[in-house]
Length: 146
Image (tube, rainbow, N blue to C red; front, side, top):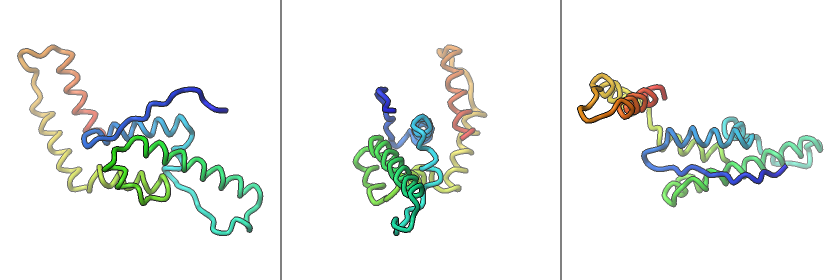
């Protein structure tokens, strides 16, 4: 059944990888294609040896993979597209972006230390209302949880 819903694909920027990846996971889940990103699929070289059911499953996996790649491409600017252009599957493209934006563990640990220091130094500013302060606190807490 085709959906008439117009999907808004979030755009990846240098600063929003964590939020972008969460939004994309939700989008992929809503389209029943997250599993193809998470687990990938096995591409068979000799389709002739496959049963009819296996060929249909392979065809469906390919279709889901191309749909997922399309969504990923739609979310990228030219520079990010170049990073994933050589990927032949959505799983590969997703992993390339993960490595590019999540970084290695050492960088992650430094980010966590910085966020902990920010959290420890949090104080409500004189001209700040409670809602803005609470938003700042939640932003840091959510970044620490990831």
